[in-house]
Image (cartoon, rainbow, N blue to C red; front, side, top):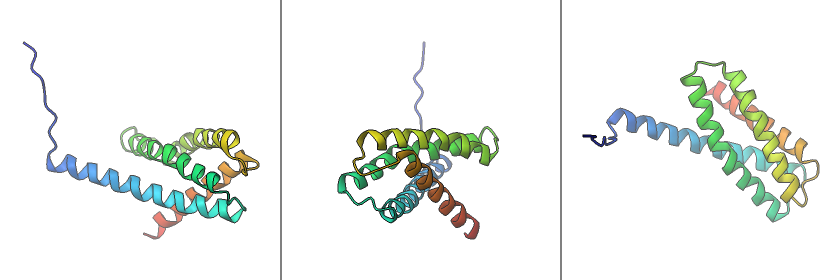
Length: 130
């Protein structure tokens, strides 16, 4: 007879879960801060376009961070290679969404590219000093 297994959190798995939530939260806050600063700097102020930037990042950042941690931690791949492999589709997806729904976002591919570069550079800089 088949027995149903129950998943139980032990202290270690719960600690890892909390660390992942913390990492996701910090990453999303830093990304939103950097990318919103960038779009304001280039003159995007339309309320719906700013909200679009926030929503797009809420949609793309957490899966990217989770995949990054899984691929670098368990697959042992190069962090730089993983970052490039994950960011390229994110930049494209964001650009497509900005093009379709962003009214004041001209050159959506460049906006997405440079916003993500700024976000990455900010995170890289902060990791190097912490």
